[in-house]
Image (cartoon, rainbow, N blue to C red; front, side):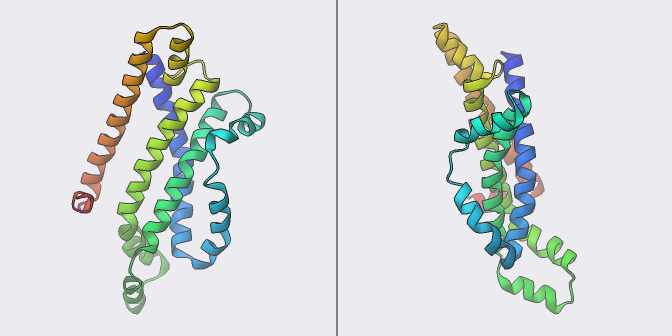
Length: 201
């Protein structure tokens, strides 16, 4: 059980990191730049509704049947919620803040560090929570299909062998892992974002 749990957790964190970081960077850039948003947004709108598990065969063709393909599938799923929430976080910042920064002669770096990043931080953090939860969901789905280790593979093996107790134990561990990840993120949010608790309520 512990080995399977560790395998799933590794895939979730690796896929989330691989997909979430580009989503964060591109989301900040698209939210800040109208020109970049008008170019890339149609492609995001076309790719986002596509079921991410449906492109798993294509990922397997490109990356092979190995650990990398599983992580890539999770990364693709984590990319979009991170991108969309981050972009929305930047766009909801009042233009007045940008005007004030310009009037005080702030350069682009200062505008980014003093206006864009703090103003979008709550939505960015919401994107992190969504991306991490989707990473867990896709990880289990991928493991059900092609993995030999992980909680998803454990569920499939329990079904094949009619081990009901193992099936329930696997589902329970997935629920515990989800609660643990969300609770950890919530604690981090309270620590690094002083207004996080107020905005949540």
